Length: 402
Ligand code: HCR
Image 1: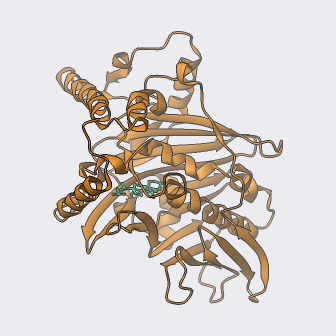
Image 2: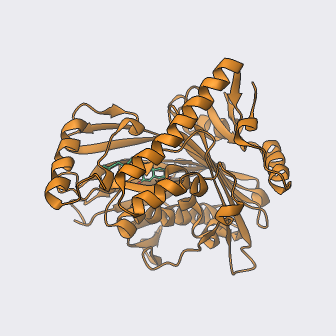
């Protein structure tokens, strides 16, 4: 390949990258990272981290008491953090820069649980905006009437050798059986280890889970806190309305062990996130996937990256980017807009408003380009029918008038 791979040239390109970061702000897609820090996984795949423990995802619906349901939602959320924020480190040795999804890119799959009580959980993840990048997702467990919908964009900044990332968007968990909603806010994070060339994620500040039943879970991330001295530390509390005393407190490391205590500070449960088994996501075989599906669309880029051929990587990436540019140009000329397959942009989302207005959570910081993104059941029916039809519509025909 034409790209040097010796450790001297790697450290050379890493220090030029850090220098170039001095003037970086805003959109993570505008960051040009050295090839060895690129991952062949597209950001559209990251929505899958929400569902890798389907048994924990559906567990809240089996609780008859609203307080225990809220606790169960909090435990599931905490259990997702390790995969969301450390899995690249664990698999690839350091945090990597994901591929920047193209508009309309899809990641579709299903978690098939061996436990018949849990059943199947479907994943739909779609890149609904390219500039700014926004990924929308839905996880649906029909058997138990549990659904998570959400969308995610990021705003980033660089200072004092750290990349700070604010997540824009939220997730809403719905339990059919109890007609209950949970508004889940997303933690902000920063990238540590840039100076040593081994970046990793640490979470900061607080995130919340607000239940329509009046319970609020507050998760306070302290990182390598001065109290515990351990990375990925947190303390979470679950409280009803303005009650002074938390009903439950959970603390420990989100990437390791954590302990649940009741109101009397008695340990009632412990959880070890790094030994808890995950359920693999089942995808359609690559030949059966639509050209919009992530693994199929990026397959040549992934092959080139795996072979360490950075020239081919860049050529294959450019092909996709140029095709996308052409598509946008054509849409503009024809006065059309790319039709999202599973999600719609809305100005207000009543389920969000119902909870957010009660807890004083601002809608404005949640919108991307002035909109919320919501899962669209009607579009999904159409997309499912189309996918079941033998002939696949060519990508160019998937553009419809506004
Ligand atoms: C910041 C990040 C891209 C965004 C990733 C998000 C926020 C995406 C939504 C998921 O639900 C949660 C999530 C987890 C990731 O930790 C976070 C990524 C971590 C690094 C990556 C940067 C774009 C990479 C920067 C490049 C560095 C390593 C040089």
